[in-house]
Length: 363
Ligand code: SAM
Ligand code: DTB
Ligand code: SF4
Image (tube, rainbow, N blue to C red; front, top):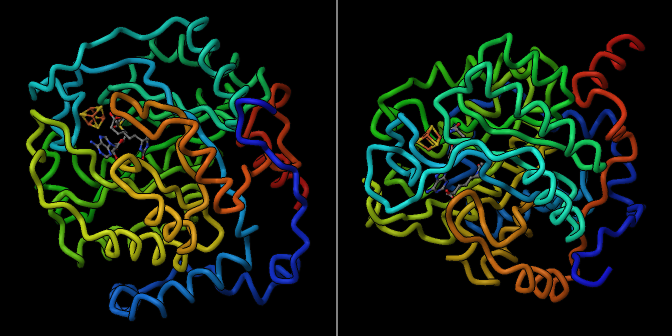
């Protein structure tokens, strides 16, 4: 596979992951207390990483990383006031707004991503929430991308229950909707919608049978207790998100958070490790902010339990590492791209929601 991170199909038969048993499942808890989470954050760094790595090996091949590629399908001019975001119409970031892309253009980008080794294609739109007529076009994109044999993800802002159902029926595998930070600190970051709105959308997504992708941003000026509270919210959901993106703030000139103090890299790694311990079966994504990270920091993040990245030279509007740099990093670390799950029925069935229904019918 020339210009691609090789999607190796290593069947991992190591002793640890091999023995995923009911006992191991007892590590998946939904009753974490805030005090327990704060105690994890207070552990010496090596003790925390050791716990995280041990648990990571119980559920995952420690050398496999899931590869997603992002595309902004509708850029800028967003009415919301998220203080971190270059796409808000309220801030002057020099970003050029673009209308919703055409299906053919999205499909061409998805093919490129697939040929470069991505297994999931994530489509992001700068909406407060999508209008029903936009969803018609987005649904055509989802169907086209699934037809390539890729998993699909979308992040379109707040949804109604009916919109979530339409996306699930179209075969959308994952919906990304981040809580971003703690409920308390949220008010400092976004005033145009509240924390509960986020939780409502997450519930609609889950009820419609889609996989949930939900995480947050580190480096917005939040305290350690906000980081613990954010992870507490995620880890005490009735079902953990399947995917937990941990973003480091990408500071964009013109946004109110530009100029915030940089995060201590070890503190960022601690968030990854605690997320891994709290939600051991989730893919934890080392998400935005990798262009600001040295290879050594990324290696530590993988050791702490991160097992997903965005791959491709752009995130939504900002830069991501060059593909060559990521390929070299993977090779140096002996990391391979995670293959799609054997039960993926991409291009045929109706995605996560259909599988969810099938499982329900057979249990
Ligand atoms: N408009 C939709 C929404 O807000 O849900 C979807 C797109 S929005 C850009 C998706 C997520 O990207 C945000 O929730 C936030 O977590 C992340 N994000 C946006 N700007 C970021 C930045 N400058 N640095 C890090 N993460 C960022
Ligand atoms: C997520 O948690 N991070 C991604 C994705 N989900 C949509 C977005 C990062 C955006 C970084 C800023 C930008 O490129 O505009
Ligand atoms: Fe709009 Fe999403 Fe950016 Fe907030 S994060 S301003 S909702 S695009």
